[in-house]
Image 1 (tube, chains in turn yellow, cyan):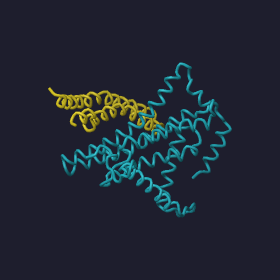
Image 2 (cartoon, chains in turn brown, green):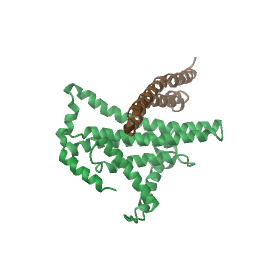
Image 3 (tube, one colour):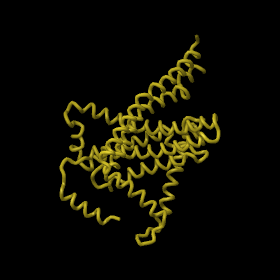
Length: 88
Length: 239
């Protein structure tokens, strides 16, 4: 199999795997974070703005890992340097 | 369908290229400056405050309260920098449904520049609050062995700031563009709504994280009770 089809095939397969496996753990972690935040808000409704804000900051940090996976997938599919080099 | 506004090249002369990112950044900056100038031309403290002025006041007070909540101290020194961050990112993400417009934060260069601003602002604020020695002491807290980890932490959270904002905004524009070519009419509108919401949340997150980093680096060790008493009085005089 030549380089060009090998690189194309592996890029596509790995992109699919990356995005599907890479978003499992952040989704589970975000679910847990939200559930704990809701528990805390139910126990102390006065503090709910602080809890909300901390929850959003925490969610953004958890989401970053999924975003890293997404950026790699985008690079592999649309700005792949190996593909660009091999089709010249 | 471009992956970033960098590839829209409008004008090239020698080694100077004016690409889409630059032009849209200038557009957002011009918009913010012109709107602020127009609103603050006739400021009034009396009974009749124009709607635009109270809108602007609401925005500034919101940012001020957030900064005060997080830094537990006077928000005024931090307000220009963090307010500018929030307004720039928020407006540039807000204009994304406008046709022909690509958010400049969808380019890694813009978000890297914003993250670098935060990276340099943290020592600047820390040193003005605590002095050089006091600021450098933070790196060897709680023990000297944490020094490499603290330094690596500084770099990695700057990188995370840049990539988080870039990833969220680029994914919004890309999903909208892809869906437009596949399923016309209703689904892209839903994706645009999601993109708007995510853009605003990410602007808020960027600013809050920048505030947290600045606050953690310029935390004073001792509690000043007198300062707090004076501070409370000043609170009551504020509108």
